[in-house]
Length: 381
Image 1 (spheres, helix red, strand yellow):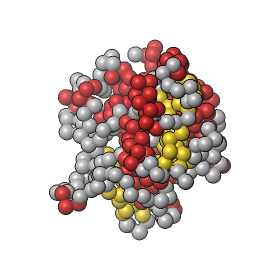
Image 2: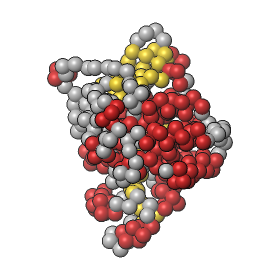
Image 3: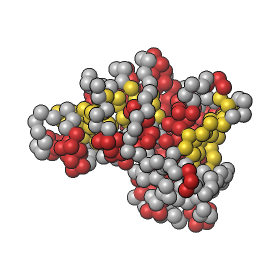
Image 4: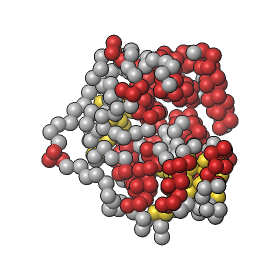
């Protein structure tokens, strides 16, 4: 039987690569639902190929336009209600959440409560509401399978291992496009330079996050919730080649690493096929072509966002929600050339100082904090 899949964010980088996996393994997977923010031109092409039963366009105006362009037997939904409905539709078995930002939180939570397996590429979901999401997953006996290459690597390294034997989780980072830039040059770094990642083909937001190392900071927070480890057991190391996707050090001193070509289709396929491994059309790693593997400490003075993420996790409660919401706003402003590169960590730190963190108990509390930090930044900048 084919596994039936819904993809949230199907026109984004991860969404499109997930559809590549489906195309290459059409005997194993079937797309029953697709969701986008507003890119109806590309969504229409995907509809023609994959013939989903339901689609969502978050922007209602765009959704109405799409209705007039596609067969009437395909349902078109919109807004957050549409995202939640498609994530919980009866036919769906796996929800691939690859939307960008905290907008992915409510659909993920709703899907978990309906017993759907989650293939999670939306790291903000766990950054913003990690304790609630993981508690709901446990309560509903739902698997959250990481799609990020780093967390997929850790997940694979831990197969057959007890979490009590973990000494350290080692998250690798390429260092991004500015790894070799000096701090003086970074002051005036332009967004189009930040988008030129040396190894990965990613969306605009995650590319900027990679350039500031905030992406790795968010992954630290995500790792804490996914693997139930303390902050002092999570280490970040720069590995420019992006061949080792992450490692786990165990109490006996052994380190297990997962290697692979920098191709996101591999972790996507693993999350969809789990617990099986199936043959796919992915880039294979040729070890004989590797001349070296380098490792170094991240420079948190040059890239302060990483340290701010550690600090937010150390404070706990709603503070990770604050840095996530602030970062989303600031990345948009950087892409619009309204602020400079170092304004991103500057205003994130200001937001952290302005917020009194508390332990949240409901999603509504988290969403209220997310709303607060966005409004606060509007008046601050």
